Length: 251
Image 1 (cartoon, helix red, strand yellow):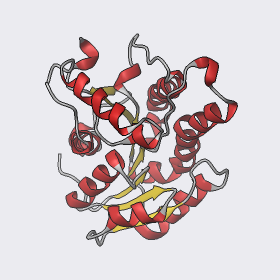
Image 2 (cartoon, helix red, strand yellow; image 1 turned 180 degrees about the vertical axis):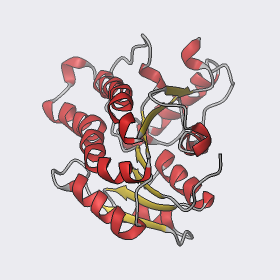
Image 3 (cartoon, one colour; image 1 turned 120 degrees about the vertical axis):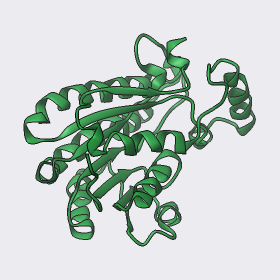
């Protein structure tokens, strides 16, 4: 099957890490991309050198953000073929130390924002026979636990459930919904969430020995899969959550 190019692609959390790598991969494919995030400076860095990439600095947890993102996408891209729900925030606190603000921030960003943004995008995606890609976590698929990151894990498990449910609900509109569940990827998100750099470096070094592939992933490893599942050749895939983690989740 041949690819339709250029497509309109919306990516949340596009200022760093996986979101940045995915945005650039779509742009290099020939698509028009809207990168969304809270801070304009990282978004500008993502878009630098890509004439077909636009940015929108907005807090996706704000009530008016979903409509604003899709309205902007239709205005600057002309269409929406792909929505990548990538933005996320994490916490590293045991249950006794969790605050209501900690919990609400993760639920709002990781679960509710993708829900409302996808809802706002349904008509635009139906018009193009589009694809939604939800970025979850291989760390909490199956029966695995994430001690001291339980709220993050719960939001990602919830996102996987939305992926499967929406795949069935939206199939009649020609919309596919898939999940990509990254394993350990060196994006620095743990440091931005409060983990000391020394502890983060030690954690990565320890994990290399546990990952069957023998290395920590990079943002480009995940970006390749995000793009691949949106291609016309992947059109029979729907509702799947694909772990991209060097084999760690099956050990």
